[in-house]
Amino acid sequence: MTALPASDRLAKWIDRRRGSESGDMLLDRHRIYILPTRTGLVFWVVIFVLLIGSINFALQLGYLLTFTIVSMALVSMYHTHRNLSGLVIRGQGVAPVHAGEVASFELTINNPLSTDRYALNFGFMLPARRWRVPAKEPEEPLPGTWVDLPGASVCRIGVGLPTRRRGRRECPRIRLWTRYPFGLWEAWSYLRPALATVVYPSPESEAPPLPPTRAGDDGESSGIAAGGDEFSGVRPYRPGDPQKMIAWRLAARSDELSVRFFESSGAGDVMLDFDSLPRALDVEQRIARLARGVLMAEGAGLRYGLQLSSREVELGRGHEHCERCLEALALFEP
Image 1 (cartoon, rainbow, N blue to C red):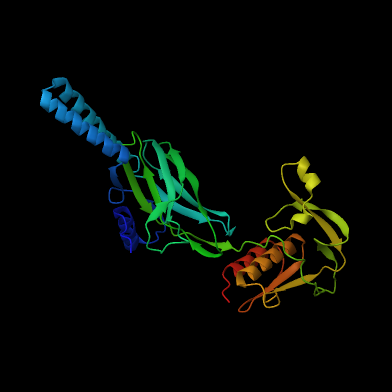
Image 2 (cartoon, rainbow, N blue to C red; image 1 turned 90 degrees about the vertical axis):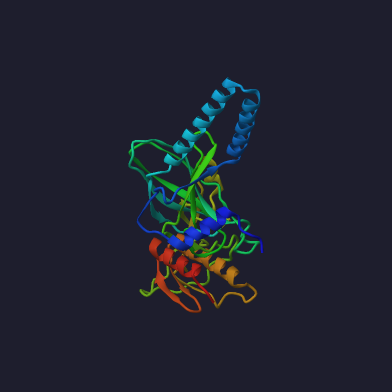
């Protein structure tokens, strides 16, 4: 087993002590760490050589130059630490996304002091190449979000997290760091806001048509379907819509994609059943096909429901019902 670097051991130790934090997170001297950067280490080597040369040749101006530069470096360490000190950070929320998209974890940063803050970076700490190596491998930060914060102000930012699989996703550890003003020192702190989201399954790219519909409770069986006979209208494109239904000529004249609708006399209620899908498809492929079916039925204005092995979502329509179905698919475990 590969030994973890000191910074990763420190982060895991802090994570065990604090865990997820709800409410305001105040960055005081107990939460801020500071060390020289690589540039800073080279700087101190050059200062040491300059000091040795001044001693050997008894250069008074060499002493003056050396200690002047050292004093500036020490003052810059104070400013680097102060660039983080006193900030108050709070987790706000995160919207659900489909697998393969970027989840944006929203944070509020409050600078109660009159001091301006520059070059603040918020980035997630994730295991390096986590899909290939054990979970105890060293962590590396993702490219983060840069922020400049004026004094006595509040701003809201989103820290992006790429997603690869469906399911519930808690907010990973966030590393906030800065090297302002000269890049000789790096001050950082670890945050773990109590935020979580649901990653919806990625819909199948080329799915077959929806299963046969049945008449609704009122006996009516007419409605809008994506594969009907008579053109009804267009609406904005949504993730999961079939590409063959995109109005490409209209898209060429505008900045957004639109999807065509057709009137179908056979449209009604649709029940999407997990067990009725072909056995040749594995679990994730079935989930992807059902996710596409949910989006297609919602876009067509049909009433639809889900029949899963362990759960049933009753018939309905609308944005909230669509999210309820996608969440059931995201958390489904056969």
